[in-house]
Image: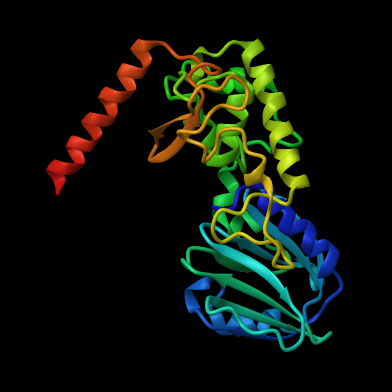
Length: 299
């Protein structure tokens, strides 16, 4: 799933390449790719709109349009926006086509069809149409502080990795950058979030920002589907410290990188650089076995 750096990269690409372009025609090839309003109305309202500034909120892209309206996009698992020049072939997973007066086209492609596009009319708050934005937590690149985390995580027993993935706490962080930030902070993903001290959270806050900014510089991470607006892959995966490197040697100490499941997601860490007690490991393993047994019984 595209995370903050990938979405930020796309938003910046929209500002660089699409601002000032006007929509001449809209073609929706997959009806459920449009979240609001009905498809026929979406097509009518988007026609003739001029693209203005694009910005990111969490993993959402909000694009200002002429007449004080807006287009909101959530890429989710496999969505991507690609600016096509004349006569370029269509991707087989093209879902929405915006023909532009310049002759170029903006394509919304989505293999898994979880992404959505919403049109927000003049005088309507974005949050009213796209309700998921209402519950988002702080923006890590501008508003995240160690003091906020200390207060928010107080008393929580959930693993810190799970807390970082909670979009109501911090908006935009996903699996990749949570793993990377925790490694650089020497914090094990299994650590109960409420037990972290202010000094640890100060380091974690700093590393979250560093990792996200570095990934934005590299154009994000491409594992399967993500590309930027011009169809170029991101490059952070080649600079990752632990993510996707299970059973490989830690580049800091040489210890073998391990992987565990947390909240249904793979978590990568170095057991030496990110130490955790034996009791905590056993507790996690017991919980994982119990969950697997429960799922097996339901089948």
